[in-house]
Length: 180
Image 1 (tube, rainbow, N blue to C red):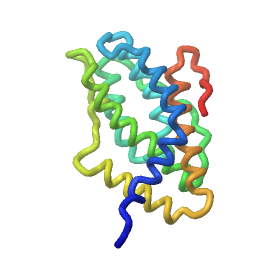
Image 2: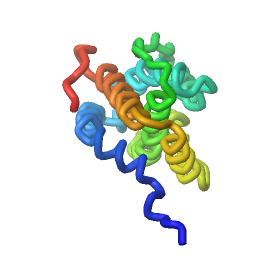
Image 3: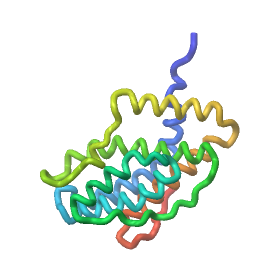
């Protein structure tokens, strides 16, 4: 009988390795009140700075950046220049970036409920469709199995890089914050 307990093990390893960085990012963005138009504008601008660089490397199809640009335009804000991402060409690194991006969609769905009525929220409302999160996890596990030695370390570095970029974008000083 085939063991099913291995399902999601890569995601769990990435989650464990990035927990501290995730908490740092959550703490930074918890400072934005999404029911305040001023804070929400700053929140979306910060996300756009990070997302622009991340999706350019990890998701060239940029599934959420156009939605974010749409929300910013509705608030009469331009799409800011993306923060630079020192990208690795390794497959694991790209999967780590995608892990952070796909996970942020889960958080966005919860945050969209906090947005004040009348404010645009296409970006935060871009939740996974039925089965998409599970399909991503399965693809992540398959990529890890095929990736060979060092793949998971590269994936952790990619996920850490994504969290660091979101942290840098969300800091009022624009400086990167420490993460583990």
